[in-house]
Image (cartoon, rainbow, N blue to C red; front, side, top):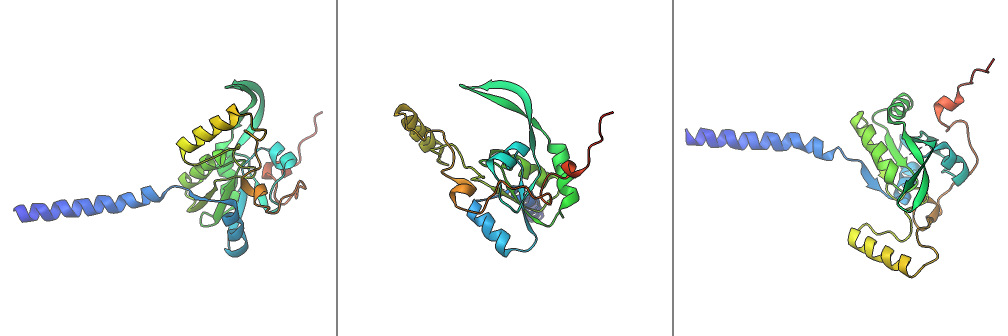
Length: 207
């Protein structure tokens, strides 16, 4: 009797462990821009998706092969965050997932990029929830995080305090990490092939 109970217990543990593995793997794979660019050049069915706003895509620049699918839109609401004033972003996640689902297959390799990896991780998680199997978050983004940046939170806090206290000119500026910093190709030119699909639909003229 004890032996049978032990066998059942071990079997139950193995089954629960097995079924937990997919859940643990359902996280976007974090990569750097140079890895993403290498995948675009070497791995079939790989696509770069820029989830920044239209204004960022046009005026800051973008990789020439990046499809524009904004995860947030820029609103006209001005809010204060800490010491800074910013225009509020509005969530577009539902339309974002619907648009990606129409354009790409669930088995495609989707490389998600934003300014610094903050928005792209959210978008990548949404795609995984929607059933996309190969989603990559480009951690360093197009412009990179504000300088200085460290993944270790203690170092990050310490060196940012030092930079701010000593009034380092480049403190909180971007361009020291990311797609542009790596020297990867980017452009201001817009190719209609890559723009946000709803923007290609002719608007009805107001009467």
